Length: 269
Image (tube, rainbow, N blue to C red; front, side, top):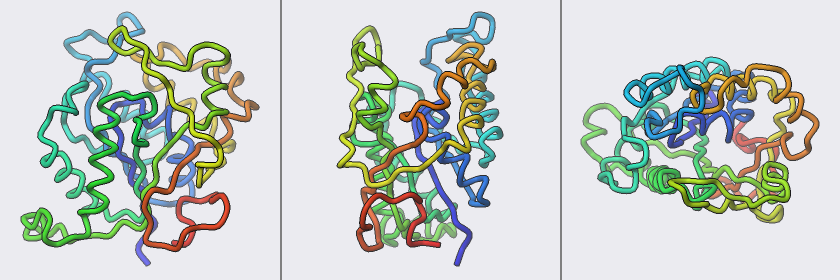
């Protein structure tokens, strides 16, 4: 069997660390090939650390921050789709799906990870990437889809499992406490969606990789400021909601699992 390969398709630098960083670190440490596809360079993001970046050089700064995070997590350098932050809902959708299909055919993962249909808190970029990855999962195995790729040597490939990363209701309460569970975007609060525990199919224990996850978050200085100290990490460790990353198995070529999965590669090893 081919080496176990995981491919995550996300929208912006820092999505990988905050969202699925523990999972990526875990499988990289286990010897799996772990690839990250990022749609943009996060050029519309807020600069929270004065002197780290300017609006003019923010794409380059955030790219280097993402490369730092990938190295910290132990995964391959990022693959960029080269779109502009905040514009994913209005780009040519067929071309975007084609880019993801090409990467699936080149990297040949057994497992694909992306956002849930709500994009976590309704971010239009995240929702667009969710759609691209989901459609690409369906099309990458079909030789009559994007046939020019086959002619170039990108042979059709069937991904075995597609997972949506979700935040459970417990995690949302842990993050926001008693305050409103929302993220401000363009001056408007977007509600952060928590998934009921009964809808979760897969729980990945990341306690052994919590420190790596925090160090990868600290790479994104322009977004989080100086998070390199021990206090933020100590605050998170021991919190039950921070000990795991949750997923919903959305597509699979394997029989439906019984109970909660503890491994994205369950049934594939």
